[in-house]
Amino acid sequence: MSVALNILIALAVLALILTRQLRRRPVREEQPYRIMLVLGVVGLVETVQFHQHHDVSTSAWALLVASLAVGAGFGALRGMTVHVWREAGTLYRQGNVATLVLWIVGLGLHLSVDLLIKRVDADAAGLSNTAILLYLAITLGAQQALVLERAQHLAAEA
View 1 (cartoon, rainbow, N blue to C red):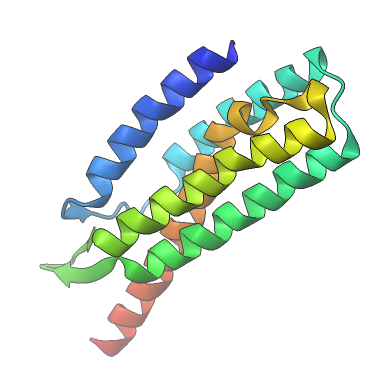
View 2: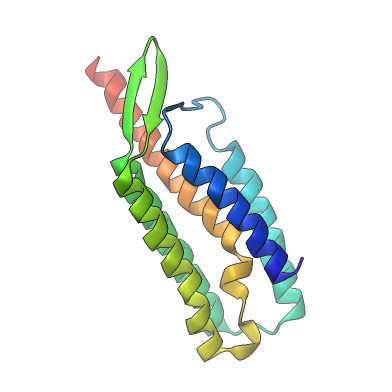
């Protein structure tokens, strides 16, 4: 898949994610990581395909892994900003402006990693952009984990 098409797909997924983040929505407590798994598998396949066509240095891989770790951190931070509550036995969540700001900053950092990768390994330019779906899977998974953890505390308090 071309980098441009990958970015277009990621932007469509991101638009869907951001609009859903700000709406009051029930949390899937059964199979809560299904969408993250799908995004992760597709992102991993695309990243492997990128590697098959480019000679990626260890430094470029290290920068990508660092960006994915930062994405997990931003996901955890967003998970703390999301309002979580139970209503009639159903768990709900709704993000806010802070959630949105953390999304924008986290994505900006991930995408800017490609500039660093290009400086240390010109042949690996585009690696971070190609791994955007993998990034989304990891950052969403971390956010979901925090939301579910916070929901456990709601149940204990009730």
